[in-house]
Length: 141
Image (cartoon, rainbow, N blue to C red):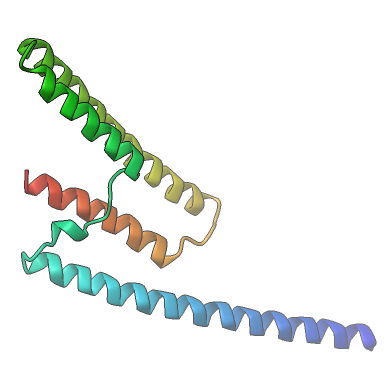
C-alpha cells in the first residue's frame, strides 16, 4: 500500500511540474508573439530603424571587416587594380561568412528538432529577427 501511495505522490508531482512547464511555455509564447507582432508592425509599415537591427556578426569580427575595408580604400591610391581585387575578395568572404552563419543556425535548430528537444519560441523569434535584419539590409542596398 505504501508503494502505491508513493507512486501516486510521484505522479502528482510530475503532473504539477508538467502543468508549470506548460504554463511557462504559454507565457513565453505570448511574450514572443507580442514581440513578433511589434516587429511585424514595424517592418510592414515601412518604418525600419536600421540602427536597431540585430547584429549579423560579433562585434570583433565586424570591426575586423571594417578595418580591412579601410585598408583597401587607403591602398587604392597606390594600387587601384589590386584594391578592387582585394575588395572583391573581402566582399566574397563576408558573404560566405554570413551564409555559413545562417546555415549553422539552421542546423542547430534542426538538430534540436531532430533530437526531439523543444526549441523555445524565444529561440525561434531571435532566429527570425536575424533573418529579418538581413532581409531588410538586402532590400536597402
